Image (cartoon, rainbow, N blue to C red; front, top):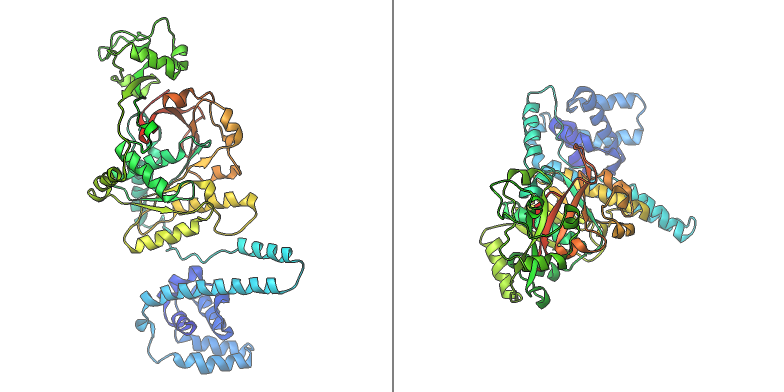
Length: 520
């Protein structure tokens, strides 16, 4: 293989042009071949072409300058005779040679690292613990050859105008669109190449939210890759998908009669609305003000609902869409039978198979999944024709870094790797990557999540394009009502504060974390 590489470097300008960005002569085993490769690269850097027949002139000049006699004989006897009187350039199969060169160089890189590791472990220097630490440091500094296609642009070339048009179109075309107030709140962040995360305490519904996003993407014709990193096993995930699609749980207690929240207007509830679009011209509340309505709990609201069966909630006017008029009313959900596996099979067939919607689920044990593994899986799927528009990872804290390092740096490394995943095209697709993360212990006692509620490493904020908090009051009032407030913690290219928020209405008995939304 090294012989083919050297012939390519000597004879083919196009080969040199494509190989030059990742070239490292130290990955060539033969010292003579390494020397010739340096001559070729130097010639290309100076003259922007392969040396071709000029390699003989370069060789004899090096001999005059004192080239080692044995090395000179090796080159003169082994390499130079390979050059025919005619150019070899036309005979090179670059479609074959370039990929094979990349494989060879990457293989050599790993072999050399393995040799270094073995030398350290067998050296006898220091204690076993010290040698292992040296090996870990060596691994952490390993930088694989970048084989990505050069996609740099020249702003002085007319082709840049097309790139500008694509950039503006991409920035305003969300991969996933959400309805109503939630859509207004964050649709413009769900674009190709974005990396979005949600911050929430344990059991706040992060996996529910991620699944809802994935299913919306599928419904809108997008291909979804869902990586379960250990929060749930495959069976759990499939059951939850079945519940989502059928709106019926597999557990009896969640199939009983219950109540779910619906949108209403604070002005109608206070009986101060003067608009003709109003649904009900009276209020179900007596002697009440806005502050009391905002603090009403589930049992109190249920009692009022049961005594006002002819009251209809309202969200009809334009003001409701743009102003903070949201309030909560209830709706009774009748008892249903728990789903069985056949119900889930029918729902999956109808939603995915019949409609040819693409969703791949890859499930892994806790703390075994890394971004490099994800990239490997995606490469295999690409060969089968599956290239995702959306990549969901459940969840960030369960991923392990692709290289070994100290724990205090490992989380930052994982976030950097996921950001790279969102920045790397798969085929021609720049994926939207979404993955939630765990909040710290003090977050259990706060009404609003803030930037200080990160866990492990605050540097994670530097890698996302958007970071949202999942909020419910510490007393459990909102959880019981089926409400969650989503606030903005980090948004690139957009002014915000942590109280910029939207309320989503939930029915988790039916596996639905977002049945509607309103501005607070």
